[in-house]
Amino acid sequence: MLRYVLAALAALSLTPAPVLAQQGPLRIEITDGVIEPLPYALPTFVAETADAGKMAQDITAVIAADLSGTGLFREIPQTAHIQRFASFETPVSYPDWQAINAQALIVGGVAVSGGQVVVKFRLFDIYSGQQLGEGQQLAASAASWRRLAHKVADVIYSRVTGESGYFDSRVVFVSESGSKDARQKRLAIADYDGANLKYLTDSSTIVFAPRFSPTGDKVIYTTYETGFPRIKLLDIGNVRASLLPEVPGTMTFAPRFSPDGNSIVYSMEQGGNTDLYKMGVNGGGATRLTNSPAIETAPSFSPDGSRIVFESDRSGTQQLYIMSANGGQPTRISFGEGRYGTPVWSPRGDLIAFTKQHAGRFHIGVMRTDGSEERLLTASFLDEGPSWSPNGRVIMFTRESAGAGGTANLYSVDISGRNLKKVEGVGQASDPAWSPLLP
Image (cartoon, rainbow, N blue to C red; front, side, top):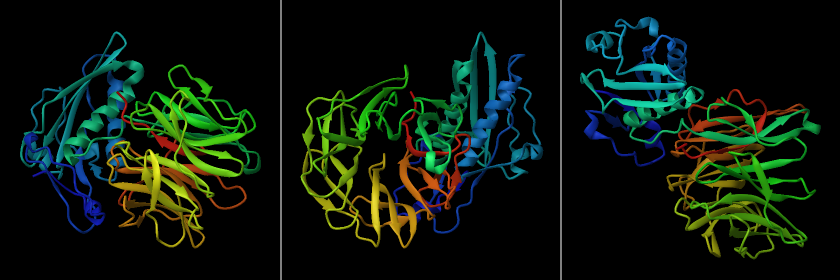
């Protein structure tokens, strides 16, 4: 039987996603103990046209990197494979895969024709001796071959874990260059794994806190191009941006979209006081949500759009609060030692990620929406600014190294606190925001 132990879920007291039982005897076991990655075999996809050889190798490599990069899967080296596939239709010899202790087998084929790439694949449960679900076929332009690979990995991940995938997604962030004292910053976007890096702005002005729209086609961020913080909306497709309307004599920053994409919540400083406001995505109908002498910022909507979590020092120290999306009396949810900031609601709705500063260290942590079951996932000189993967399984954040020449980089960590790793390929970077799954 194909098994996978997700001990971290039990440690967090989370409810596992439902198993897709109709696809075969797939089962997710949740136990206390050490996570043991699922051993899988991934032969290089078969080249079904004469010019598809290199493409088949590249697609196979990306799928393997996606799955193994989660820490939930372990690839069996191809040098250990006994059976070889000359055709996508070659029958599976289950004893050959059992002999090398594979529990899952992924078989695929790649064809290239007229600038299009076609990928087909099947997933097999080795110990039950059957295929899991129907085989699938995907097609896209040759330039989008990486997206095809990510989509295949998303399907495999979902069938094995019962959770939705997150590989076919992007990250927008602040790309940094230069010395720490004269650092230049510009918005950039890349695949979730750091590939396909593209710059969205130049480095002529300071930018920070980019956030995706719910559809992933727009980014809202804060810019200093007028000399003061202002909110700007950028269309990723045509890379055009426009400043949102402002109230004279104010500074606006820390914007975030509502789940329906029709409004944004943000901070506005006026006369030395900073409160939260909400307005239409095109700048209309601003409504004040808080009215306090405290500094209130970093708002984030719940997935259903009914509530907002934010940080405030109204209690004397930086803490987390939740209130109705229409304003009203907020409720404090953080009560541990230290200061809390940059809260972000999980796409699943069950957790809130945050930055915590305590005893000279910074942490990325998660807690329930009522503040219970706080769990710190990281600790370093400076970890901050968490952002959730589309499925709520992984958190990406900024880690800055200590010292005068300290650099900022993007890291990710599983909600269990395991599988901490640097995001390669993007250079010095900060302020990540994860997109939804791409259409």
